[in-house]
Image (cartoon, rainbow, N blue to C red):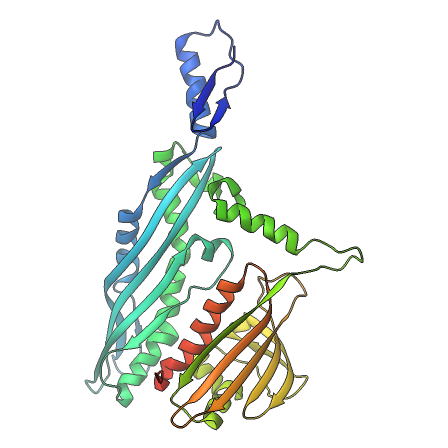
Length: 357
């Protein structure tokens, strides 16, 4: 005997069941089918908000100046998005994308106080699935005195990375806390990411198909990649010469990148930024107006490099910074643009350069 269950536009067939089976055996068979082949989800957004509050609020870092000065997260001021745990064919699938905003404060040894905000605009399963960094925005709301800026530097240098580390635990805790509600005794052993389960999302399925096409070998055996160009720009309150130095001086790059840099503005020199997440070599140097580099991130196809052209244009009261990244693998344009804006443009603005409208 075959039992056919209809749901939506598709039918699902149970394994053949002997008609002589008693009712309890048949129900057990159906329960097993429901557990392993049915698609179910559980909304976990309220739980997620509590999780972020519990794990982020109260985090603190010292100033390390011989005093009791420190900065800390005071409260969760904003949380938007959706968090779900899904079960399909015996696999648990984490699906979440949310924005987290925090209020921070600090006090220096001389009594100087400072406060501001930290925002993570996208905390997503894709960060963990694709080993992508958690982008962030920080703001100093109090007066920008010397000690206040020192406290603000600790926020960006030490406090933000500590919060980012907490995010790595979120996916695991989400599964462990809610797996049983979806019929799993041991969720961790059967967890799948959305990128490995195309049926979980049309977007994920399209991404996988696109990736296969991008990395298909050509007739000659070489890997071919279809590409696109990405462009971002901003007017910054700084002279052309000073901005050039910020972008090319290995001792000043960490001021806005918040990470060690290996960089020499000489043609042929290799460079590494953001802890090795960006690498390449210098192609052309026309100081202080134009810099051309080969450029890649680890997530791109092996051996594939784009080209980043940095152009500076001095204005009356500001300098226009334009970043043109060519050779971006098709489908990665949004991530590339977001990365350039977050790590380059916002990084520079964090120094107080601001935007000239």
